[in-house]
Amino acid sequence: MISGAAIARVAAHEAERFRAANPRALAHQAAATGWFQSVPFHWMTDWPSPVPIVAAAAKDATLTSTDGQTYDDFCLGDTASLFGHSPPALAAALATQAGEGLSYMLPTERGAALSAKLAAMFGLPQWQVTTTASEANRAVIRWCRGISGRTKILIFNGAYHGAVDDAFVDLNNGQPVMRASLIGQVHDLRDTTTVIEFNDEDALAAALRGGDIACVLAEPVMTNVGMVRDAPGFLQTLRTLCNETGTLLVFDETHTISSGYGGHGVTQGPKPDLMVVGKSIGGGMPCAVYGFTADVAARMTALNQLRPAGHSGIGTTLSANALAITAMDAMLSDVITPAAYDHMRRGAARLVAGLEQEIAAANLDWHVTQVGARVEFLTCPTPPRNGGEAKAAMQPALEAAIHLFLANRGILLAPFHNMMLVSPVTGDDQIDRLVRGFADCAKALKE
Image (cartoon, rainbow, N blue to C red; front, side, top):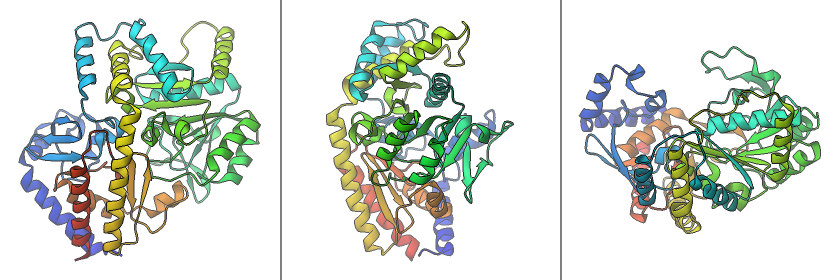
């Protein structure tokens, strides 16, 4: 057990060390008053450092700051740059497209080729492109409600599906509640969103057999409350119950694309009716895709034939712009490959072995979870079974101290939790430095 006093001591020391080493970041924060909270987007303030690191450039799995600091990047844009920063094939393709126009609101030949590559990789025949995964999830929810004639969706407690209103319902002592942190929320989402705990087969069966759920929107592995793995057989039970009750199964694989080539549904099973992939599919370009089965496509077509002409509530004029199409085509052609995943899995296994060894050496009651290229250490003795348990196990002050300690030694983790990503260009030397930094941090916390 690490005491609160030890956490506070390490956090205070590391905050002072950060201030001394990052004068330009401090000056930037003081000068950038034209931005609300001094940043162009509020999540940039969620890092545990006294002020955000100011990025100067990034390449492969290394990021440099305006203060001249060099970081081994295991955050990788919280999955946006899962396959490395600025892969050469992507950079070259974007440079060419930039000279040929960025957004036409018209299809391109490259887009036709891209749809075939998506189908081959993910095993779904039909696709659409959006600007963000949030937008893709909103579109999928609309389609599922439209083709099923049902109003409700089902999500899992603690899930995150981007800026999607329907997903902001939590469980509090077993009761559904509106997420308390929402800004400007005026509609009660509980009328159209059912929330249960992940891995709860009884609650799942009871909810779906009511016959009013249009779709289950799920990450096949929860990734935003720490990683919560699916219990043996749970996802297959989910697939079976959806089939039984005529409920559409949607996998949001924005994060679990790290599981393997084709995502979790392809590599681990079962396959969904619809899936969403964002962030990394364009190498960090704002774009996302959603794919679906031929049966779902036929039902979409039938719905379109019945509804009046006019705006569907799905999509924006920037969806499927030429630059995004080019980015995704370059990534699927030259960067996101089975060989890349082989490197990522080997590196992740090396990281897991190193962290587990240091956790044992420090006699910490922590554990490590891995799903493909995604690794996380959780500061609790046993893996949580659901979002409720995961949230209860979180130790924000401890996690922040660890993150800041590592950042001061040139190692970046995702700021929201203890998640680390291994890219195809992450080196063993970078992994070993992370393990050594973790060991030094554990020692400092136990002194």
